[in-house]
Image (cartoon, rainbow over all chains, first blue to last red; front, top):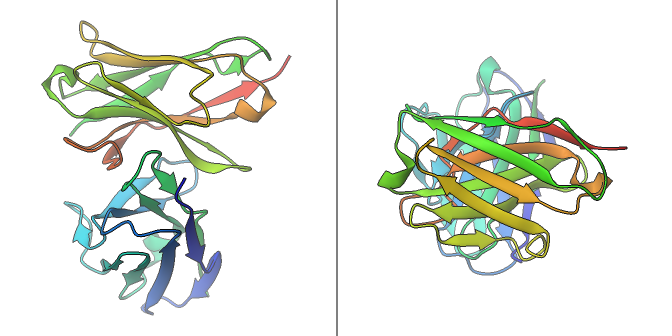
Length: 107
Length: 121
């Protein structure tokens, strides 16, 4: 299975601040990388697909980049409603696999 | 807006069969897309269990394949289902059903709310 390593596992940031999360795949996955947001008691929500494409309806402060093995996810201006756990997920190979998540908190 | 809703027992005894259904609303599963099951536990995080295409083709996580009895479609009810057996305490998790991609298993754009399944005697 392809291992997805996210960092950091948690971070604190200020409202209005910029947040960046990284995700590294254990092998080349091209751009088959998604990012999800999960709030407490809720299902994950797809934010970014194919590494850099914004899912319909998702605010433009969210963005993603990368290809191959190294990817990043950025929130350009953190809002209170962005407090959640963020996961990366690869789908280049079966089984699709997820990172362990990054818990985002307000500073 | 596609909606998915899981249903099934919240408590299953060890060695028995976990059976869940996912009702899909506002989209006909016969029209296409992969339909999948994903679970989440504190120990293993998010774990893909398996998916089915509208043709009935199935794909399972190799780590669970020996215990996934079936993932199946019921076109008449616009539902798909999961059967996993035998279960142990390690199968305790929140189980989600989700829509995959049109041509790829792993792009999960719509999810159910999740159902907590506890394996305990």
